[in-house]
Structures are given as C-alpha cells and as structure tokens.
Length: 432
Image 1 (cartoon, rainbow, N blue to C red):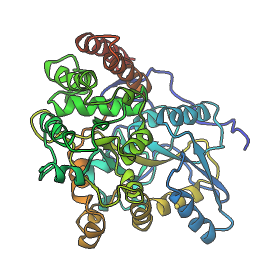
Image 2: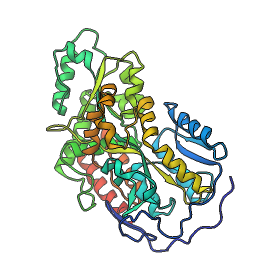
Image 3: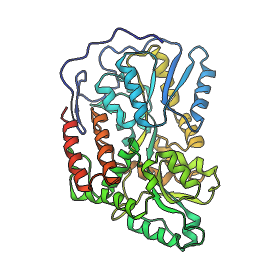
Image 4: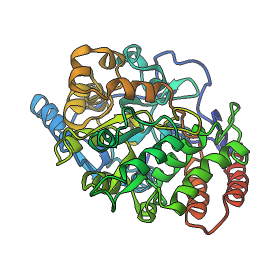
C-alpha cells in the first residue's frame, strides 16, 4: 500500500507523562462524549488490514474468514507480526512514523493505548458505536486516554497459576497455595513422590522482554509494593518492592525456579509445563485450551496467583482494537472493529483460544463456567489486577524495568542496586 502524505499538524510542545497523570497536545481533556475529537472522518469502504501478533491458536483467521464471507467487497487481510510484544509494538510504531496506510486496525497491548493516542498514531473513536456498558469497567478503562475512547476492548487477560492437580493430590495436598512459601512447601512434598525428581517447582516469563515487565510488576504488587504510586510517580525503591524482587531472585538461586526460565516467554513455559518439567506455572488463560489438548488433559487446573502473605495481584493484560490515523476505508474499519469485538466473536475466542472475554456476563454464565471452570478465578484476576504504568513513554519505562529486573535475576546486580537504578530510570522516562 502507498504512504499517505497528508495529516493534521502535530503541536510542537513536548509530551509530559507521569504514570496515570497523562497530558498531551491534541486532546481536550474532557470526559468521553462518545464523539471523536477534531476532524476525524470515518469514511471510505473497501479492503483493510488487521495487524496483530502471530496467531498460535488459528482462531483469528477463522473470525476474519467469517467477516470476509459476509463482506466480500470489504475483505480483511490478517497481517501477523512476531510473537513477542516488543517486536509487535516496534513494527506498529515504525508504520505510524512513516505515515503508512499499510496497517488499518491494530491489536494493541492494553498498556500501549496511551502512548499511541498521545502521539496521534490512532484515532479517537465514537464511543456510542460499541457496547462498552456491557464490558468489565477495568477493561474499558484501558481503552481510554484523557477521557477519550481511543480503542475498543477485544479481549482481557489476567495471570493465573497453573498447577498439576494429579501430583498435588498424590502428595496429600487438597488446595492450591495462596502464598509463595506455601507453593515452595507444596513443591517439596510433590518432589518426594517417585518419578518427580527431575521436575522444577515454578516458572513464569523471565526473558528480557515485555513478559518480564509483567512478571516483575506482579511480584512487586504481590508483596505489597508498587511500580508507580497512586499519583503515577515511580516508587519502586522500597522494602516491599524489594521483597517481591527478592522472591524471584532467591527462587532462581535455590532452584525453585529453573535456571533456564530466564529464557522463557509464554510458549516456552507452556511447553515446559505440558512436557512434565514444572509443577506450577504462571501464564495467561490462552494456555488452558492448548493444555487441555495435551497429555496433561484432566491433570491440571488453575488458581489465583500466590503472593507474599496471601493471594497475589496479576498485571492487567489483554488487547484493544485501535484505528490507525493513516488508514484508508475507515468506515469499513469501524464496522470490522465492532464485529471483531462483539459478544459473538468473544465467545468464539473463549471457546477456541481460552481468551478472556471483555464482557461481564460471560463470567457469570453458569453454562460457560461449567465448560470453562477457570472463569471465576479469571474474573477475580482481572478485577483485582494492577495496570502496568500507563505512560506516554512506555517503551522507555518497560525497557528500564526489563534491564534492571534481568540484571537482578541473573546476578549482574544485587536486588537493592537494581531497584535503586530502576527508580532513577523511571523518574527520567516519566519526566520526558
């Protein structure tokens, strides 16, 4: 596709961000009236693209095929980006910075909405076109920037603790652990069983990428700390945050977490769990359907994440649909966004890919809970989740978190020094 050469002029004042207290040129700062800001025009019909990370489930193309059958003159082409979130974000930013119309509808990690809106890479949307009132409130909030709607929730996400029910039962353990110490004690009991000598206790996503930001934030929040305080200012160099990081560092040192977990992304952990290498695993709900199709079917379930003194806190995950400011055929794009984020599509994603629906009623439907027993735990994970820092310069913030957390996990720095350096780096990134 060709590159557009016209666009509304950006203001020249620098963007200023501090956690949730975001300001940017081009926004009126008022509440969402349901109308797009400025002169945004949602006109034009014809072919568009949908841009997202690689679909490991196959269900995305299935939903797109359904749209294409119904709209043969407005077909959607699925552009698949790499599986890791950092690469996805970078490619989307590169497309925006060249003002290319190659990307139409973007699947954004929920934490990217503010960044993309502040830089005017995505359009403000007409809220009345979407059933936001039927969605979970924390999920809808991730789609807003300074009171305006800049994206539409397509799926939510909350971290869950996957565990081997068969092994816990054999070890005489009747309930999943609520704390880190209970989890390590349960592992010790399981590893005394015949045939479990080569198993490791626990893993998450600890490679230096967005997953590490998520897992680090969850450890800090689950120990009573914060990455940014209520006013949006970095506050990570604290005793509580240190306890969270110390859990991860100590678990790697004593073997509770296997050494190779510093190379794990989501799929690495899933495969390790399914192959019998792990007793517990932190992962997203997408894994449930895949694990049910593996040799572990009927031998695992999920629970809320454990924490220092009780149940922990997940990072709020999920994906929002946003409309590229440089796209063509925006009328088609809006209709596709409504279709792709509908209750019907959400049900398909739940059924075929274990993706968390944004709609509140899905979690209270007895027939769905019977079919997907993890839904009550997932709802609590989402409702009690803590958002990652919603800052305009999110790339700088997450890069700093990954750098310092990885240094602590691999022993390049002490936990105390890593948190001190991270506090300084976050203060710089949120002051830009």
